[in-house]
Amino acid sequence: MYRIFFQLIFRRMDPEAAHHLAFGWIRSAARVPVLRTLLAALLAPRHKALRVEALGRRMHGPFGLAAGFDKNAVAVDGMTMLGFDHVEIGTVTAEPQPGNPKKRLFRLVGDRALINRMGFNNEGSAAVSARLAARNPVFRTTVGVNIGKTKAVPEEGAIADYVTSTERLAAHADYLVVNVSSPNTPGLRDLQAVGHLRPLLTAVREAADRTVPGRRVPLLVKIAPDLADEDVDAVADLALELGLDGIIATNTTIARDGLGLTSEPSLTKETGGLSGQPLKARSLEVLRRLYARVGDRITLIGVGGIESPDDAWERILAGATLVQGYSGFIYQGPFWCRALHRGLAQRLAASPYATLADAVGAEHRK
Ligand SMILES: Cc1cc2nc3c(=O)[nH]c(=O)nc-3n(C[C@H](O)[C@H](O)[C@H](O)COP(=O)(O)O)c2cc1C
Image 1 (cartoon, rainbow, N blue to C red):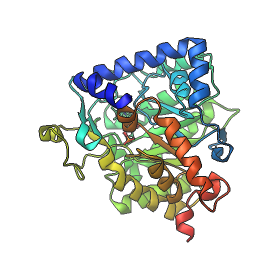
Image 2: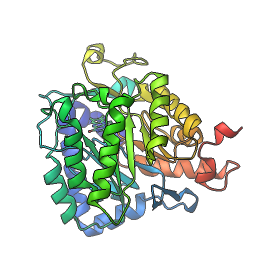
Image 3: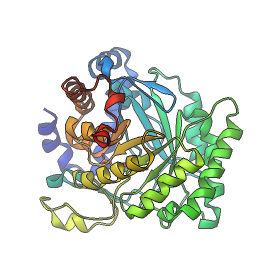
């Protein structure tokens, strides 16, 4: 059904306009109690074996919405209604900003991929903080808050900028993510170098503890798939050294490997971050490398090119406690999350593992 709808309607529309249309529908549906309850009952994960504890939270299932879809925290209940058990909002920057000029989002349908150079368009940390504070949550979803650098702020001001966002947002976050991996903010990915990352993460940790004294807000870092292997190892070591709670692997890539089937080859030349199916192999590789280094000492979240239950299962065996997706939702539609959770429950039942937690990183123990 969704595939036909996608071909007839969404595919003919500008991708960003289609996003806003679908987003509007989801938000509207979530405001109608009967519809919301019905859809949530139909789509929420409810297989006991999929329950998982991560980042100090009890989750109903491992699959969540990756950052970038709900940048301003306007649709947390709507996305939960569709079965995402955690929703990562953002990237939020300290100051509001419009992002890059349009067109800035491209569909590579033949490759089931997207290229985006949105550039952190968002309402800024003060507005998002006020929205989260006023939120009357219908569902007890885990809300991750992903923060990034305001574009106009020079590199010397980066730490202060992240600290401002932390001070405004940490109290509303079930977990906080320092995003240093988007390819669309000039210089941002340089912050992944350990020399920059150590003071940044230390300052964000201190700001979170200062602002939310009664609770230790879990802190994660999100990394790019384009890091060299040695740099992935260096981030893993730093995460252990600083007592970070987790790493999210990965963001979009500036590489264009694995593309080919797309109907419009000119699109592959668009600058920006590539997501979806062509990102799968490298994201998995980075995750494997991280788990080999950190084991179960910190939580790994696998994201990048996850489309099917097999993809999600593969990430779990490779070391991910939680998994996320974005591009798959565009191509597979509103029942995607349920299909993933269902399929995962089937794979778990057919496996030698009693719980999902037993399966995390299992391929490394063979
Ligand atoms: C249009 C778009 C916008 C995105 N915006 C953000 C963002 O603001 N912050 C972030 O950390 N990741 C962002 N991402 C990256 C996703 O969170 C995810 O890491 C990436 O798309 C790989 O997952 P996927 O292959 O399932 O899409 C964005 C991705 C897309 C497609």
